Length: 151
Length: 103
Image (cartoon, rainbow over all chains, first blue to last red; front, side, top):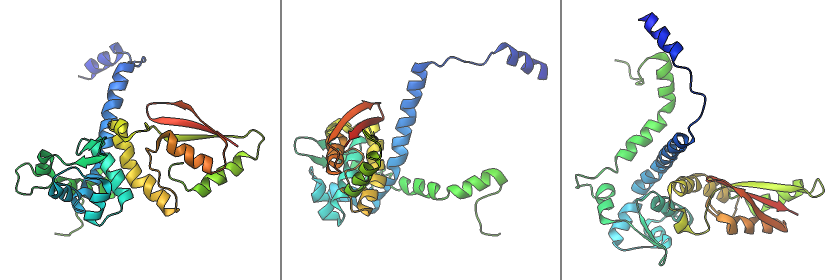
């Protein structure tokens, strides 16, 4: 076994030239993950502040001011949130009217708690994972668990 | 720059003027001028950062809260309000735009 591994290691010289196409493909994937990860907190906020629900209840395209007024939130933050959500494909933006809509199908996933497609709560789980990051760092080193409760 | 207040823009000018013909290079997240042209993976990331970093940081300093996707018109406005007469887009990458400002 050891000998075989040695021969394999010697015969495969390390790759020195970078395939730019492969690099660009991977950068695209990382960018997508980056955008999804950073947007997760914004989806959570949309759920927590009832932004998706307000859009679903409104039932037609709305402006940032209309959404802010109906949810008791700051229009400046809502305007930026809406753009992020439209860029991620969660909302649809109409540039002529400068209004946003939550498609009814998306509302099943984000608002309708009785739908089998409802997944908004998943973002609460993701938030919880990020909050516990120091515990995970420690656990990876110690090999211990993360619960502090003694049995 | 998009996170800063007008006051900060003037502060940068003071530093630039320490040398004759001082130039300030400003690195900003890439953005197109129109919102609909930023609805892509890079815009998604930048709008998230803008909502959670840039806008709150600027508002904390009583700034204009331009957001990370202000684009050239927004940045130009802040820089010129800070007293810089010359402003131009020097170069760009898919992720950033570099602007040049002179007194």
